[in-house]
Length: 548
Image (tube, rainbow, N blue to C red; front, top):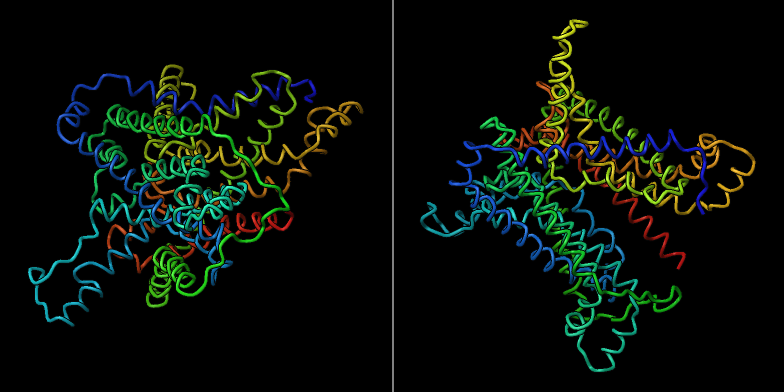
């Protein structure tokens, strides 16, 4: 039941939030339809189709490899018992904390011609030059697919594993009675049961793959993401960059549409909370150790080996890596992340309060509209944010010139740290919106009714009733937004003011210069910060399991 408080100011705040945070997307769509007879036409006639093809291959390759890696892992952890399973269930999510460009650098350093692996092979077999033997080149589109999949497969692993655990075991048990082997049951029963979860996870992986800039840029693989970056900084054409961004938006809409279409007729039947809590398959002997070895191999490749090498860099180059610049950029990143997380949480609380309290059928619109920015890749988001801020700066300077009331402020919004923080709010607001909305769903409407019957105003109800009950959700939302801000790279590269670095851009500059060792301490800090949400997710899942 919703209570119709006097909500005029809350309605204004909610709809103003939705309008402001969706404005970059509206400007981007409008700008993408503007004529550009030179730059975009030149790109279309020369390299645009190659960029598009590479993007499609990248998305398809990452999704396919993620399925090969994650689906067997999820099935093993959901249905089987084998040595080390309890630890692998949470440890296999750890690669999510590792930025792809750091993994890309580490494996390039390992597999390059001058790296330790090829050097060892030449020493053992007596090879003298590259013409004496063949060795794969990691700096290719295929290499980028492997690097990105090693980081993104946990999305599919976690979502598919959760879906399997929440499904009824009876169909799998029926397949056992019918004589299905575990492999046949996996393909004939488990995959169809989790089709919706697989589609949702692959949609997320597709968006993350298309949004990746650092890895493909480091490997010199041209995709639509790098095309936006190069068009803006190389040709200085916002319109052409907006048109390329429009193509990427079309890809996003297609991905989301396919995901929704795949689940249109699917019904999900959950098992009883007290039933079938044990594993369905007890692996032993060779099968058990093969399962353990497969899990260990993926974990080693995706997290253990990169983190060990990164730690060795940090120890060997500690005096160079632990310096004043690292402290300065870490502090700058911390300040921005704290401000953005506070703004996102505050706006989410206000929007959700209006959504909860209003009787209007349009009450949910501001939250949904404001959350659209999360789907935008970082480079596209930078273009989208720059368009309205540039227009605002232009109008402000024209007003100052015509009235002479104050000096022309120059690039007050688009050329300052405000642009970067606004971009972060647009991109990460959806995270806080979802977390606060979930917390609000657990607050009984009877508390609102009691407050209203006692004559308490809407503001006091929010402050004295809702806020104490939302503390945990607010803390979780703020923490996740904070961590995402610390890790965000493409938007920071394009929108940061002159001579301003975040920790992510600082590390990436060293990666680009083949000198990650000199920023290894900062890179380790980014990874360690990224482990926090994984710890929260694991604790939440364990707490849920203990109550079932």
